[in-house]
Image (tube, rainbow, N blue to C red; front, side, top):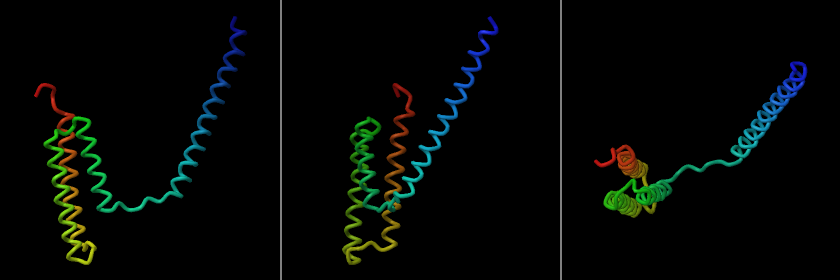
Length: 131
C-alpha cells in the first residue's frame, strides 16, 4: 500500500509546487501591469473646489448611512455654504482669484469641517447601543 501512495504524493507535491509558482507569476504580472497603468495616470492636485464637492458628498453619504443626523448634516452644509460665500467675497476683492492667504484660510476651514464630520461619524460608530 505504501508503494502505491508514493507516486500519488509526489504527483500532488509537484502539482502544488506548480500551482503556487503559477499563482506567484500571475500575481507578479498583475502587479507589474497595475504599476505600468499607475505610471501613465498622473493624479492632478486637489483644488479647494474639489475638496468642497468631496466633503459635500461625504456629508450626504454620512446622512444616508445614519452616521449623521439631519441637524448635524445641515450644520456641516451650513459651514460649507459660509465658506463658499467667503471664497466668493475673497475672489471679488482679488480679481477673481484667491490669494495665498485666502487659500490657506479656506483650507483651514475645510479641515475643520472634515474633522467635525469624522468626529460625528466615529461617535455614531462607537456609541454603545441604547445610549
